[in-house]
Image (tube, rainbow, N blue to C red):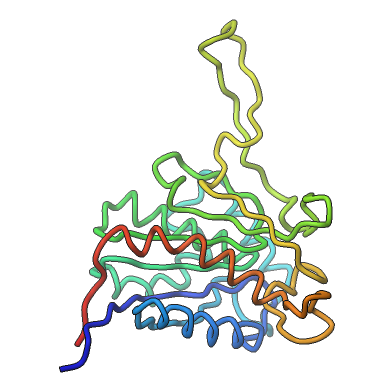
Length: 241
């Protein structure tokens, strides 16, 4: 009898004007890494805002609308791909990894699942995404990976868009509202020193390798892995034999 393995549904969500080839290396390496953990992943690539051929301005307008805290019913991007996600509403765990605007759509889908009380333990990893305000019950379900420079500063211009901020009143001081720039931030915010720009998190060949021959994809995958370990161990996944 073969050893038991766990199965996991994974959705990769692309941003605007993205070619499917941009995710090929990530998909292959993620498949390998999860299998090494005893998990058999079913990975699917989705385009919440349309593929390369769709008008760029329309895609950008939809991402901007989905950045709102008041985005309705999974937002524009989430609604467009919900028909692919809804059939998996009975799984125990669902992983969504979104790059750029895809990270915005991934969060809005997670919010829909939470608000509709669907029995899914969802994990969202946003990579190079605009800042989206995360509601407190989902904060620990969302991780955020962003490119940094040698000084640890945000260097991806897209990650400088949006806001996690909100007004708060500290109980140990005078009741005067203060602006908290991370009031609605994700539970984990992780920097990665990649080479290149916004589109290069998943590059795996020269010139996107450093002096130690470590490529951007390896660095990004290391951060993804750190976000997954505790979550994968927190409950039993579906078992297949």
